[in-house]
Image 1: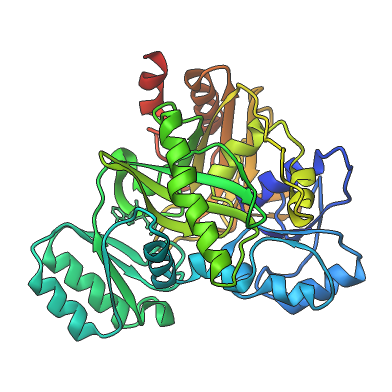
Image 2 (image 1 turned 180 degrees about the vertical axis):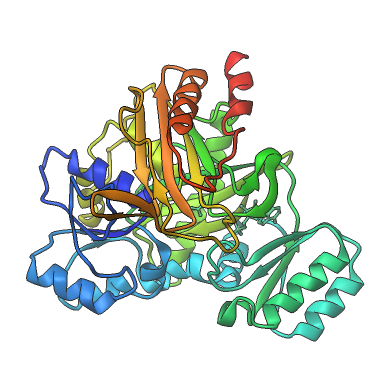
Length: 421
Ligand code: AMP
Ligand code: GLY
């Protein structure tokens, strides 16, 4: 059973369904895109007890959790009361995403390179700090999970002040009662994923995400407007340094404090002139990074997840095809701020070969498809080069229509130039 309803979960369902083990698949709550490959179950990802009861009654052998909230909320502990297996970290280990303060202090103790930081639990002291420093730009982060919206890169003291007041003023609820103010890192950002049982580390490929809403990396931060793989600009030595200096010490530290980590660990990394530094950790796969990675994966994802639960990752490797992938996210007008739903989607028939469409926020009624979220569809083009993968993705995008449809036109553009070098 896959828990979640976005494009990441659609890609997970597809990859797991292709396993040699021929699993019978469920998705809770799932979406119309998955309905052909998994039985969708009308239980929200937030209802942990109902998910557990369903898993018990239907003898689900393995539950794979897409989004962070159920993990941060303790789905692993909830399921283990009934001896039900979940691929993902415990509540204690998921604090690495659930609390920025926890993550920063853990990194500090583990000697992991990251931005210098200060923690504040009072507005006055945070504001006093803003007046005592000249180090702008700097970054203000709400401690708790705020769906990617709790982070402000503030260029000026005024912007920082506004962000601090927003946090303590309750804009992010309890997530903003404590904040981190940290140094702004310059460099190139990448998303790095590993599967781990707390000791063995099985590296995935890194991927490039596009967080800003508009072309040229302008506009507000979103969950992700596009992605591509592979990323040509990351040297193998840099990737090795990320594993050795960021991922492994973090996992070791989590074990030391009695919260060993299992599942997927996602490190958001800034590759700076001084080397890679950790921006944040997430306790799950990235969305939309998963949508460009899983179509390239040749290993059996389900077997790897089972092996992870059995502490049997040693000697395994993940195999990847040489295909390149580019994902363009089609979003509702207004996303990431307010947006309407219930708008009809057309043009999904007869898409070009080499294109996958993952559903993110869609709903089916009477055989027609409607928007049901901010990020609506993920269009993934594949091909022997980024140039071709990108052309396929955008050719498919041109065929798809819903009123107010918004997407970035510059996804993977930089990669074409790098590819030629
Ligand atoms: P986070 O949720 O911590 O990854 O922050 C969201 C986004 O804000 C990251 O993906 C970065 O683009 C940006 N960001 C976070 N921390 C920093 C930092 N210290 N320096 C520069 N950019 C940052
Ligand atoms: N694409 C960023 C994330 O999944 O958090």
